[in-house]
Length: 134
Length: 188
Ligand SMILES: Nc1nc2c(ncn2[C@@H]2O[C@H](COP(=O)(O)OP(=O)(O)O)[C@@H](O)[C@H]2O)c(=O)[nH]1
Ligand SMILES: [Mg+2]
Image 1 (spheres, each protein chain N blue to C red):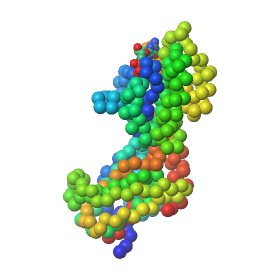
Image 2: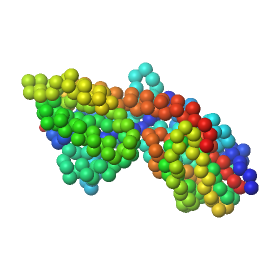
Image 3: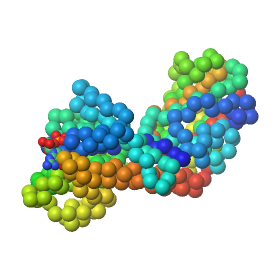
Image 4: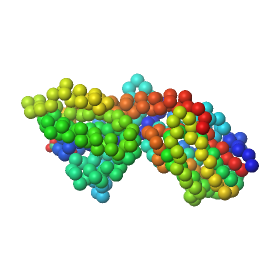
């Protein structure tokens, strides 16, 4: 079992609910916690990662800040629609360092993974890195 | 270029002019959505404010929580999320100004220790002969609460943009501040 950055698997972020040109959603999947995507206000916030082919994922690890609750949905369709619920987790608040949470996906096969930040601890949240275990 | 989005709670006693102000926000044509929910009595306005000399803009999602007590409770359910505050009183009513502290407490009770940045608006500045609240007094109180102070006349459409611009600027600096903070975080 290895931790991979989605971009190393050829994945892309195809949808993100916020955009600041200086902190684009690609920063989520580049494997680097120094770069990040920041929401620009209001909840829920979401982003969708698309894999080039159906991929069995045992878990994802999310490095973030100020996220209060994250829900993950998936599909195995070529279109970024009709998602099914996979898992949900409440994140602990952190001060001065990033949150790091691993969510089990039980080897679900997915083409799209949808990350929905339903609420946050502040006006804005940031996501620094998502890695997948395949 | 960033497009920010902020929730803004429009609160204050009944009859101070909240609906009239919303109406003015509407009239310059940049308002692009207005919804009224019969179930909660909450009105939602979405107003886009461009911040001068930048390419940034802020979409304000303004909820008018009607001053009537029964409706306020319905509105309070929506106050949990981090928001900006637009607290309005009537310059010709000392009572409506005195009640601002109560509004402030009420809003603070819902945001779990977060600061509540925003503006205090003294409305009906056109009725100068009937004024009961002096500018300096309102200004001092606003400052003590961390709010910017503006006087408006919804009737004469005087100065009604100022509170909106002030809210937008406040939110933009909040964003910049949070960005800087995030850049200094260490990995989990
Ligand atoms: N003279 C004057 N009257 C105002 C002004 N703004 C609102 N009003 C009047 O005050 C009354 C209450 O206004 P409204 O917007 O319904 O108050 P709300 O209950 O806070 O929404 C109405 O009769 C308005 O016409 C203003 O700037 N000047
Ligand atoms: Mg990154």
